[in-house]
Amino acid sequence: MQIESSLRSFLAAFVFVAVFGIAGVGNAAEPVEVVACSQVMEGDAYLSGDLDCSGAAYSPFVVELGDGGTLDMRGFTLTGAPGDDVVRCRYDCVINGPGTIAATARGHGISGLKWSGRRRDEIVVQGINVVGGENGIIGRRLVVYDSVITGANSSGAAARRIVAERSFFTNNRYVGIYSRESRRPIVLRDCVVTGNGFAGVNAQRTRIYDSEVVGNGVDPSCGRAICADIASRILPRLRRTVCDTSLRLHRNDCTLGSNSPPWCEFNSFGVCALD
Image 1 (cartoon, rainbow, N blue to C red):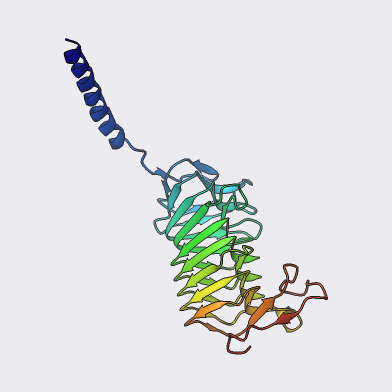
Image 2: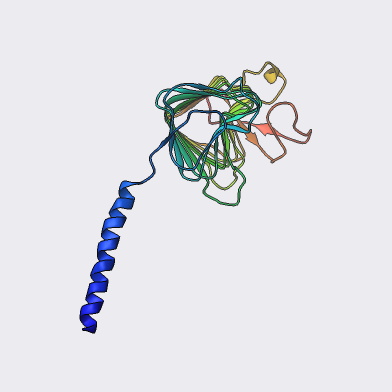
């Protein structure tokens, strides 16, 4: 009798898990439509039309994605108010295109908690045009595919760790791609970096493959200031890549532009066409 009772209990538990477990899978949270400015999303989200928040009252963001959230742009445009970050990520997030994110000079296009304690906070951007902003994209770790980052007031992309493929970084006021990480290189594959004010790439370590990093250093002060296509502390690793000028930054306090201390020395690496 005890064995029979135990068997009945086991079968009842099995049926409960099977029925309600399957029902739970069927009721998994569906993506939520973004319909208003300053919307906080705890799961996945999507746009069903353009959302222009340029005239809205100040808020730190237009859309905030929770950890692991995904925003599907579906070909539409998100426009931020002055000072807003257009998309803000809490830890890991993914923004899928096609679509456009337009920011003002005092806000970022896409931002993350870039100096938080978690080592692998990652923003993944795929097929997005990011236009304007103080920085186009800023975070701790960035992965950028098939995107255009242009018109930022400072850097097109800024992070400790950056990997980009098949993307354009153009016409940003200061630098196309900036990284302060000293242990890991930024990695570019099949990218175009051009028309940026003081440098195309400014990083501690750089690996660039099958790319063009030319025509940077277009700021009017570059005749008397320090500018280059690629600026790095460590010899850049270039494969099948075209560049015009390179610059070795000997110390952390030696920077692009005209603000470096007088003891800084600037030499080329001899890896670009005009070095």
